[in-house]
Image 1 (cartoon, helix red, strand yellow):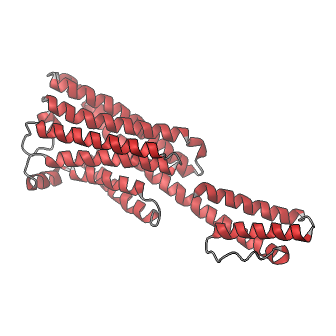
Image 2 (cartoon, rainbow, N blue to C red):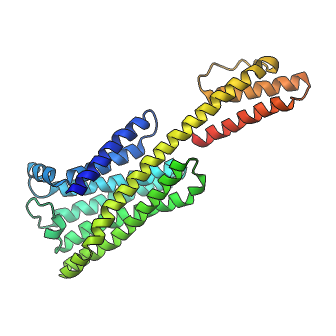
Image 3 (tube, helix red, strand yellow):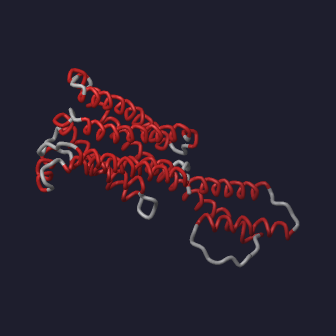
Length: 312
């Protein structure tokens, strides 16, 4: 229970941090953190024993928390894909369809179960039923596959990481994916062994299960947090570069730039881009080349714009 409480605290704090860091931005990863946190919090033993009887005392909290984890893993895959620039419409459609199918299968298997009274060891008590194996394997296979897909996306985009936090975050998610796949294999074997009456196999695999389950969650959660922190660091660095570019361009613009009567803008990247255009227009109209110092100022400003485009 201590480990469950520790996980819950980490995820709740992480959710608050992400919601604050991603204020005004896409919050897919923050939503993922919240879903993971809800899953872990509802499975803390004292809370579970208090909450489940309020819902009928048939372990409804178990299926609710498992469905939240399925949803959280889905938003994780989509959120990481967006964070590294790998989001595609077909991927979103696949994730949504797969998530819905898994939730339907899980709920159907749960309804078909001969459900025990409230227990914090649901699969140990009900795991000898074939429907319980379907219930567990369906969600576990999806979680493992989704985490593996997330890890593959991260590996393919490691070279594009812009900060140390980005790189470390991607590697943490890769590790979480590996642990998720190992957990998937372990759980499938445990479920099938339980139905077959081979409790010795189930007991033998309990340690790998106890290690890979929190390991996958914590590594993945840490990776998400580091990705967001990395993006914030990159944005602040880009903002500083754009401000420096504006400060360097304005004297040059006053000296040789034209006035193209652009509408007012408070966006630093837009202002830098317009100043560059107006300076180049002014140089062409004056029919004289820019000196090396002026060209260096423009090159630095264009580099800052490229950096801004990469962190957008």
